[in-house]
Image (cartoon, rainbow, N blue to C red; front, side, top):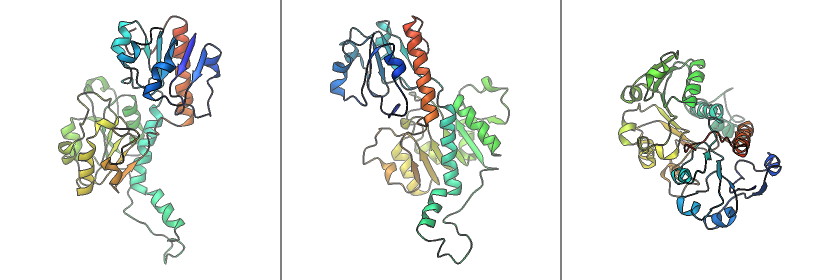
Length: 320
């Protein structure tokens, strides 16, 4: 069976192995695939593996040999799943592999705001401690997370893990979810509406899927309900934020700071307004990229492909 990986570099820049798949398939791996090369590289392949390279209907229509699409991600909006289903092509994703990693980055961002280790490290390297008259100094207000209120929007596996860590830090935990009754047995979390959560939270962290309802949710009206001392963290999907509204809120002091691991366009355009905000931390979509996390992803991909080869596909997102 012939297989192709269209954009394997971010998942495996060389520290993992594709040999397990080469043992089963005639495999070709590309680091990246430009739009004008997708059809050429997929032609004749029964298995197509993609992360961010899109497989739209007009592309799949020209690939009659395709029998299975395996994603290297949890999100599956890059594939026309409805069209794939009409051709009985299963589309499998990688669910819940990065829960701990995303929660970890969420708190790395919060602690950067509260303790500012990067800022102080640079100050020390610049000689400010060497030339200091006192045994210590600080470059801005330092804060404890204990006793602060965290507002979690979205309470899937990542949101639940964030809640557990926040509780361990001694934080008061509020959560906003569409079905709070589902979590009636969860201890240490108070479920509230968005309107109740925003004015109380010292940090608001987004852990929701991208849907028509959540696209642009964090806008001027959302931000106006937050405390001027509050922080916003987004490790979910870039388009959940109206980036211009967030930039305006940061620049005018409506909120104290924001930290994002995702943007509406990735890589970002040079004119993205968040790039110019001093009080906005931006990481390049790295929450999922830890070695152990990618190992776990690779393990699920292996299970997905072997299940398909055995005639019983798993983790399918299009009902096949």
